[in-house]
Length: 301
Picture (cartoon, rainbow, N blue to C red):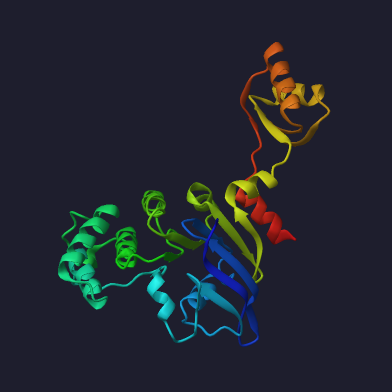
């Protein structure tokens, strides 16, 4: 039986005359890695701050681990770890000093702080780091931020755009860490980078115009969006011309690349023609659905 760690029902929030959330409904399954996707300014951060009890909702209810979130009363936050898009630290501290301060503020004893700090700093790749935080790169600060949020063993880890300003190596490091903590907690992270979601997420919700336009398992959504089509990139215009003349199911041509309608049978027929007639091609592949194509379709409606 699937248990939802986070439930949002009919959440509405406006700032002046601007409606940001217009009846947001969202469920996050326990031990999932959940991608919360939307364009910049779509309301992802507003929703997350509402979950944390930092914003008063105009309408709607939020439940974390079965407990109702109440604005200004942060009892439910004992279940939550939160990493903002730009985490701030005391720059004069080392990572271990900072985690010790956080552990003491949580009421942990020294032995527990030391043990947990060792585990978490190893997890995020900072176990040998003795420099002051002031010299850390943004990626290192994000990794330390994840360690900090996991210190109290939260049931839900919320990350707001954790990879948006990182280089490819930094993004990979953060995604690998989030993937590795799935057995310990549920991960909810907001992003507009769809490739990040496809890489590690089990579930996803697409936010558009203040509402969830699409939600479900990543694999199921991609399968539902599957189209019967494939592409062939020829090695020259003459080769592409030969293919275009031979097949009536060419639906689009972009230079030397042809898009064909059809499934496995049609794909094999084109490959057979290529082999029998010595057609030189650079690439031939089935067109797989992507979250990007689904998102663009949703936004365009």
